[in-house]
Amino acid sequence: MSSSSLRTRLQRLSAGRFDGLWALWKPLASGLAVLLLLLAFVLVASEVIEGDTHGVDMSLLREAKAFRDAHPLFAHVMRDLSGLGSTTVLTFFTLATAGYLLLVSARTHALVVVASSLSGAVLVSLLKPAFGRLRPDAALADFAAYGLSFPSGHASMSAAVFLTLGVISASTRTRLSERLYILAVAAVAALLVGLSRVALGVHWASDVLGGWALGTAWAMGWSMVAFRLLRSQRRAAGE
Image 1 (spheres, one colour):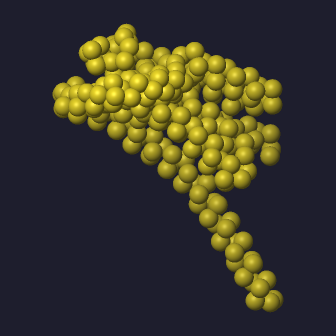
Image 2 (spheres, rainbow, N blue to C red):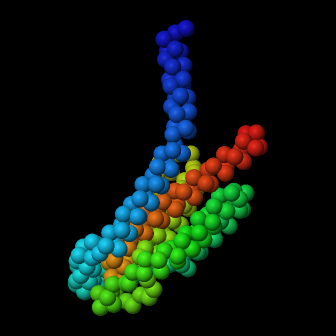
């Protein structure tokens, strides 16, 4: 056997072992990431309850108001970005994506997309009254916002919805560059929605941090469910 043939066989063997190890450790790594994100949410929530975030939260709100007053166009842009995390827009994206997935016979993914969005909305609606945190003073806000504050519904749901859609959409692509691009767009969308809420003064910064942690954990958890169901279906079909 030539040295080049031996080298090729060794490379294939190493690649196969790496793929096997990655297939074993990937669910564990994803599960650990979910647990760490939930822990981050708990830590932020505990700081909020104890009032330790108030100084930083208030300072950021005042700086945001001063910047809006000096740059009126900034507030206009932030309102547009904030709208991406509204219930109407997120519902549209969820139903549009679920409809497309049904058309291409990806029923499991469609179910997960809807389940992730609905369960996330229910979770946030239960957590807000549990913490009972009031929104910032309306004098510091760009517009009057109603309801309780922690965690930020816009930040939580935009992370949960956009990241779930991003992960599932990326899984349909084979090129790494395409997957990374889709995931990056989803992450940036969730990031901008959260930042806009602080920039507009309708949420404390800690509301958004908690929302990001919770929403990202929710998206990762449901994505794990989707891939596990898909693997089970493939085994049952003998693939």
